[in-house]
Length: 329
Image 1 (cartoon, one colour):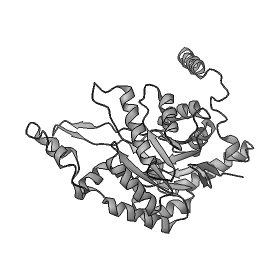
Image 2 (cartoon, helix red, strand yellow; image 1 turned 45 degrees about the vertical axis):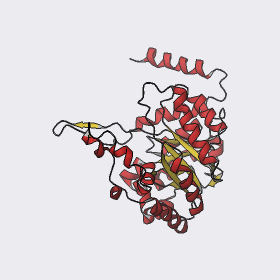
Image 3 (cartoon, helix red, strand yellow; image 1 turned 90 degrees about the vertical axis):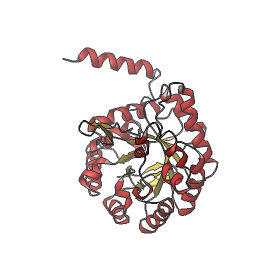
């Protein structure tokens, strides 16, 4: 049975990729992920703030306006709170590459082009097989148009692509007015892959201390519906590889994503909860289902439930929306 797939020009032994998470901070855990069957690993992100802290470029933004709002300084973690400095992150790439045989994908998280270009180049030189741009941008300015937001993504991608030769994927959030058009623009700008979707963490409020708290919630199994839907829409209509992310916990979830059109499925919370060994059980479930349904390869499955054969995807989507509402009891 052929479980192999291709993602970002990389030949992978199966579609299971360990997504960016704290698990990738330890070399021993990366080895355990490989031993359990992960076909590639995405390292945790290097944040733009880390780069700016190192260059002392963030001081103005941390100090500006604090006369009127002293708590502004507490928004950003102190430099010593980051797990790795930028230079240590680059060394971590080198150590990971030396420790495992599977591809190692570096990750950059930010919104501006300044430090991205330099560190994208250095990540390539450190041995990263590919790069994932995790553009975490919340457009809170009411004067910022949807076109302006799209331009931020395209500009960052264009700048990075001009600096590196390794494949680059963009991790997107779902909140675009015209997601398919945005995907097409990113493909035209050189993205070899799209990761659907980034999860923007909603903060909580502590009613005792009256503070805003960052409390990330694990993705629920129901979260996979949104990326699965868009992967099915984009498959074979936009010339990029597609990585599914969010809500993937079981072999059944991986199967659904692949049949929708995903080239790989990124595992995150299920590994955090159950450990790297979870990958092995998911692989066994995938193989068992393929044998039962008489599939001989992942390639044969891939995109078999996408909208590529539907002449009017919008009409198809609306028909299913109506059917879902009218059939509910």
